[in-house]
Image (tube, rainbow, N blue to C red; front, side):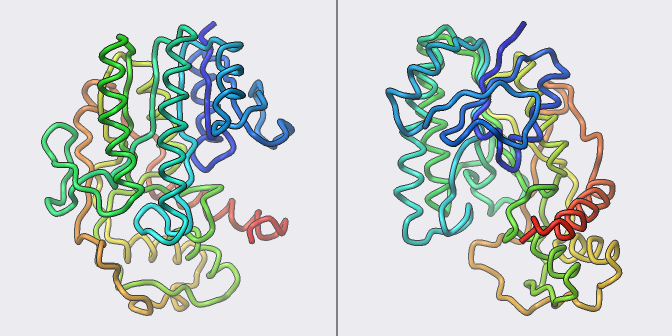
Amino acid sequence: MKQVLLTGATGFIGRHCIAPLRARGYEVHAISSRSTSHDVPDVIWHRADLHNFSQMSECVDRLAATHLVHLAWSVGQGGADGAKKGDCPEGYRWTLATLNLVRRFVEAGGRRALIAGSSFEYDWTGGVCAELTTPRRPTSYYGTCKSALFDLLSGYAESVDLSMAWARIFFLFGPYEPPARLIASVIRSLLRNEPALCSQGTQIRDYMYVEDVADALAAILDSDVRGPVNVGSQQPIALRDLIAQAADRIGRRDLVRLGALPTRPTDAPLVLADTTRLRTEVGWQPGIGVAEGLDRTVAWWKAALERGSGS
């Protein structure tokens, strides 16, 4: 059986990757620095801190997994599109931890790795981002770290003949999304009968439901595709329309306050993934879509707030 080491398995994307990985025949192993008694089933847990190099190396050597999916990362206080005090040390630490993880994975006999990159690596001024033609010009330290890490790992993978894919993930929403992010914050506010404060929402983005993102990552890992692969829908939607669709499912569009927040300086008018590689080389297309994804997301947040776990 193929063994995959999954980092970030309790995170927003990682927990959704387990089912599609298992469906493709992988035995899923996960590393956590905390207790391995998680609410994430169907995983074999290993206790290790990715930032403790000797501890992590011992764990990776003992497991000797054939495959790696590395999603673990902290974007700090400012989020992926900003930088506040404390963000830079976090990005630097995660860059070093990733380099060490991949090296140890290879030395333990690992053959195939999928590393999470980001759309924040790209120069967004052109609107549509393609892996092989769009320049990389990040405007945040998070994007800078991811872009530099891509260069470092690409050279390393070539030198040791590691089959490595780099998933540039665009915008997403769904269950377990961090509450401060756009769709989660809007849904939570409206379910509480509170105003949802938003920008004008004229920005056009490429959004995808998190279970589709996770399934795409599993498909990329299971393919032979190397290098950068955009993970997006290639379906443009204005933020105000996405917000309206979420509000309509709750019946509280009247509480949406477009223009209550300023548009951030880094908010380009259009950011869209060119998904040609994902569609043609990996052979993957979204199976759930935005409409059904919003239905599921609203239902999940309703249940989470009723349980008192959606704060």
